[in-house]
Image (cartoon, rainbow, N blue to C red; front, side):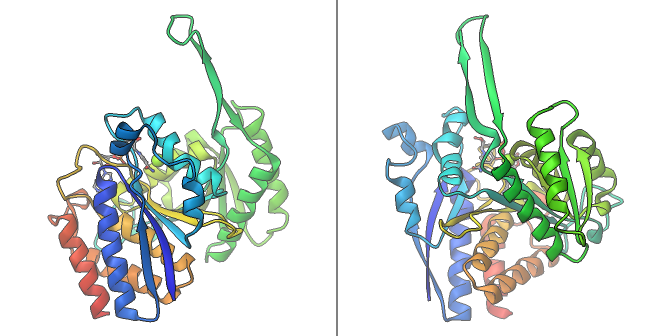
Amino acid sequence: KIHRIASIPGDGIGVEITQAAEKVLHVLAKTLGGFEFDFTTFDWSSANFLKRGWYMPPDGIEQLKNHDAIYFGAVGSPDVPDHISLWGLILPIRKSLNQYVNVRPTRILPGTTSPLTTCKPADLDWVIVRENSEGEYSGQGGTSHGDTTYAVATEVSIFSYTGIHRIMKYAFETARSRPRKKLTMVTKSNAQRHGMVLWDKIFYEVAKEYEDVEIDKMLVDAMTVRMVLNPESMDTIVATNLHADILSDLAAALSGSIGIAPSSNLDPTRENPSMFEPIHGSAPDIAGKGIANPVGAFWSAAEMVRWVGQEVAADKLMQAIENVTKAGIKTKDLGGQKNTEEVTTAVCQEIERL
Ligand code: NAI
Ligand code: MG
């Protein structure tokens, strides 16, 4: 079986970790047999934007639709304002392909430690379910008198019944599928009195269909404190586009490094391809040095492998990643001394050995 993958390496370390992930996926397919990955690379980067004036060609979304999944590195360059690069590439893909769920698991991998000195590995095992299509990242609003001291800008958050209901359903299903059957819902419905209140209301409505799932509700500010002080008190977390974006970076840092954290942008209807990417950005501060941690990219690749139906291969890849971290073969951000290539080679060898 051939899985057709659209690969968008993007910018900075996005290119380095995508190369590493493709290498690992080829070794995985070759070792297990019975399936292959056919990558088509799309050179939609900031360098090309500066040359041509666009990130994606007009039929870019149509080109992506021809694939079983999309693998994405990262986009963002010091030479392009970040709102241009994000809105040029990653946000339109998520929205146009109806990838309304963003799943972000966080765990402390073997052989790594949390900066929370009191935190045992079993204490921090979360899945953050991020609303990925609307909310604070709806792109609605505008600026008047932009170049003057009278400037006023609005950034409108849009929350719809449909948008909230479908993410709640996904979050409850995720919570139910995990041993602890626990869902924490995050809002800021004390200060934000429309969209966030609707979010709360639909949460309790959907909860009635999931009496086996234990629920609780947090305000986002208090949530940051709870993540640091009582990580063991949570399991599945559901939050808006903005809140979950922020909380998942915190979660990644608490689990050891932003360099290990994966994400899946899913269209659960499977009408469109889903997209898999590490949560980190293009990291211009370390780009080109060959030292980026590829673990988040490998973990994202494992989620992609699972999504296209190769469960055994996905489990094997995760096991290889964990064996390698356990053996202390880690990049600097995890306190190790290895570079991207050394970790990649170790994961490939471990796949072949397992
Ligand atoms: P970032 O995630 O790129 O970097 C934050 C810090 O973490 C940096 O010190 C970086 O060196 C470190 N880091 C990140 N990934 C790492 C890895 N794999 N291994 C080791 N260290 C790692 O976030 P930042 O600096 O805020 O953004 C840089 C650019 O990336 C910006 O242009 C931003 O807009 C873009 N960005 C793109 C995203 C995407 O494509 N989905 C997501 C987040 C940011
Ligand atoms: Mg982010």
